[in-house]
Length: 517
Ligand SMILES: [Zn+2]
Image 1 (spheres, rainbow, N blue to C red):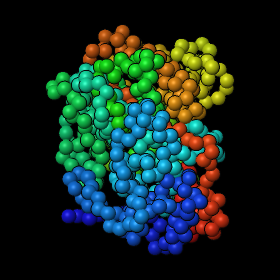
Image 2: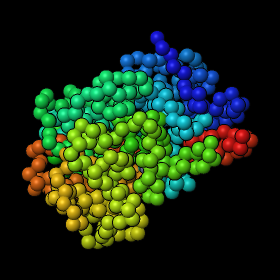
Image 3: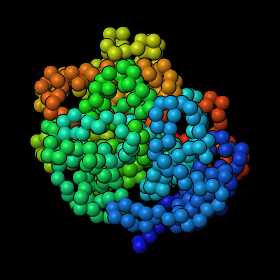
Image 4: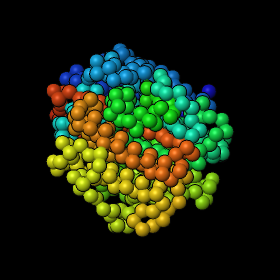
C-alpha cells in the first residue's frame, strides 16, 4: 500500500496553522450554517472537510491508475459521507427537494474531488463550499447558482448518440465530465498510448497525456466508428430540466439526439469547483481542474501577489496559456494520431490545438459580425429584447451557430473548409437563463428552447452535407445549476474579518490566509 501525502504547498501549512484554526472556527460556527455547507483544507499531511455538525480527516493510497481513500479521524457527522450520484435525479425529485440541507444532500466522488482540488499550486488554504440555498447577493442575487460540490450543482446532462453509439435511451446511470474526452477519443478510433492517470502515475491505456477519466466503452458499438464527432456544450444546463423539455416537445432536437443514443439520467459530474472554464477545460483534456490548473474563474497567486482571472471575456482568448505542463487537449491528441484531421472549436475557450477556433478571430482582433436578436431565428424576444445578458448571449450563440453551419457547408466568411473530423460547439445562453431565473424558470426554459433551435440548425447543416449517418454526437454541459433561496444571503468574509483573521477571498470561497506574510 503506497500512501501519498498531499503536495507540500497544499493547505495552510505550519506557518499559517493558527490562522487556519481560527478561520475554521468562524466558518463552521452555527451562525454561518445557512450559507456554508463545508470547508475543505489540508492539514498535517492529510485532507479535511469541516462543517457545523462534524468533520472528517482522510488519506489517499495508490490503487491502479487512481486512489483509494481511508478515513483517519473525525467527529460528529462526516460531511463527505453521502456520495450518491442518483440523488435528486429527475425533474420531480429535484423540484420536491429545493434547498436541501447538508444532511439531505449528496456529494458524488467527494474524496476524489477534494484530493484533485489541492493538487493545484494556486489552491487556497481553505475552500469554502457554499450551501445549496445560498444566494450570492453581490453577484446579482442569481436565482440559479453552481460552484459547489453538491450533486445538483455538479450534475451536467450527458447524451451520447449517433453512429457507433448504442441507442439505449435514458438510463439510470452517471459518469464524470473527465470521462468524455477519452470516450470521444475511442469513438474516433484512436489507439491507446502511454500517459498518466488520476494519481499521476504511468498508465499504458491512455488516450490523452494526462487522463483522469475512463472511456465509456460499453456505450460504443464494437468496430463501428463514425467519420465525424460533434460536441454540443450547453453551458450551465440543468439536466433534469433539459430532459423534461426534451420529453415535452419543447426541445425537439435534443430529443432527436436522445432517441439516437444513450443519455444518463444521473448526469455527468463536473470537477470541483463546478464552474465554467475549469470544467470546459476538463471536458477538452480529460483532466480534473486541480490537474490542468485552470482551477477557477479567478484565484490569487501568493508568489507574485497577483489576482489571476481566467473566465472573463477579456481573458478567455489567452486562458489556455495557463494549462499545466503535460496536459493534452483532445484537439492535440487527434492531430497527433491524424496529422491532416480538420478540427474545430466553435465559441470554445478551451481550444488549444484546434485547427479552426472562434477565439483565433478574437486573438487576431478580427471580430465576427454580431447580428441583432430582432433579425434572428430561435430567439425568445420576451427575454432577448431588453438589453442585458440574454440579449448578449443570444448574439454570441447565433455567431457560433453561423460558424458551425458554415463549416459544414464548406465555407465561412470566404474561406473554404473540409468537413470537420471533430467539431465542438459551445453555447452560453443556457447558463445565463438558468442563473437569471433558476433551473425551472420560464427564462431557463426559453434559453433551452432557443438553444435547441440552434442545435437543430447545425444538425440540418450536417444532414445537407450528407454526413449525418456517419456522425456521432455528444451533448452536455460544464456543470449543473441549482435553485437558490432569495432569503439565504450574506457572506462569510464579514465574520472572518470581525474575528481578526487576515485573509483574502477570491472567486467567492477561495480563502488565502495571512496574505501579507
Ligand atoms: Zn455560470
